[in-house]
Image (spheres, rainbow, N blue to C red):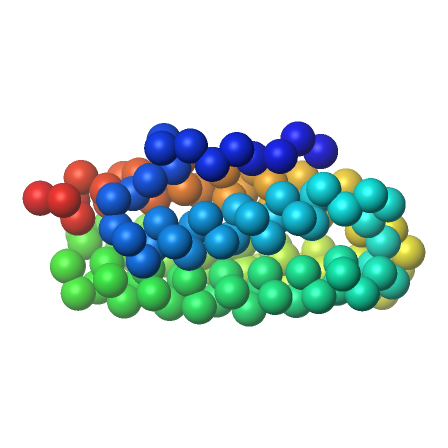
Length: 131
Ligand SMILES: [Fe+2]
């Protein structure tokens, strides 16, 4: 799968959020860049596990920040995070239960979700934060 190249277009302009986003994209690239991605590989389960944990920390940071600045669309934004969590739990469960290989569907979802979320949903609060 194609890697996500971090460029300026991903920057929200908040150092902590940008650092976390960058870290998440790095983890994702490591995951999709691992040849023969199998759930039995320690690297893969480590990355998946760490990425899930890190995503939780990141969502908390972001939601707290948006709450502090009284971002008007926080509710909708939280919904996006929740949908991600649910989908990941679902996909990971299926992956761990039934397959030796990490399904393309899981990798694709992670890949598309993070790039779309940062570039579309997170960008919506960028101007708000800067004002
Ligand atoms: Fe977000």
